[in-house]
Length: 95
Image (tube, rainbow, N blue to C red):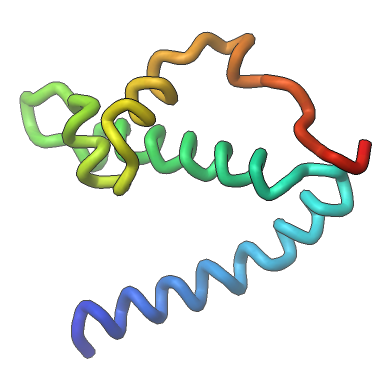
């Protein structure tokens, strides 16, 4: 089993895990846009954790951008945004 096979298996498992969670979000008026923002934030939080950090090195926005596939500008915004801005407005078109 190569690294590509493992990635595909992880993506399949991730999809199975997300399916019921996304149904709950939809039922409660959470949009795909809000969900994408949340997922980006979780990626940045996970990449910022000490678990992935190089020993005795600060986890820079550039390194987090490389790990997550997000731009440095996006990483900076997500890491340095104030709490009040994080909550944001409800973007649902239904409500």
